[in-house]
Length: 116
View 1 (cartoon, rainbow, N blue to C red):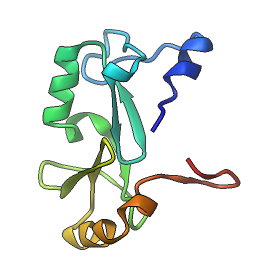
View 2: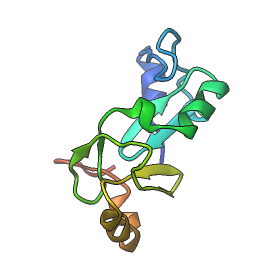
View 3: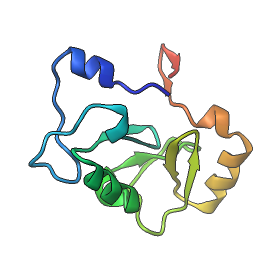
């Protein structure tokens, strides 16, 4: 999935690194991580690795791709990867439902715009 960095860069928008907010994130593919329906940018390879080890420490609320409910993930939240994206779930039951229809649930539906 294409990320928004091309548009962010064209518009001159800057984003702070979620791991080290004192630094500006690098808005490129190598420093981008998709978690559920959110996009995160990091300021360095080192901060990207820190983020990948424990994303729940940095993400804030996420949307469960099955129920569409917002929740705060934790170290105990079920986690899967699909299509180069990390997914956290509220419970294992949602994981099973996701795995049965991952391609349709892995992309957000934007009202009036359809699937991203």
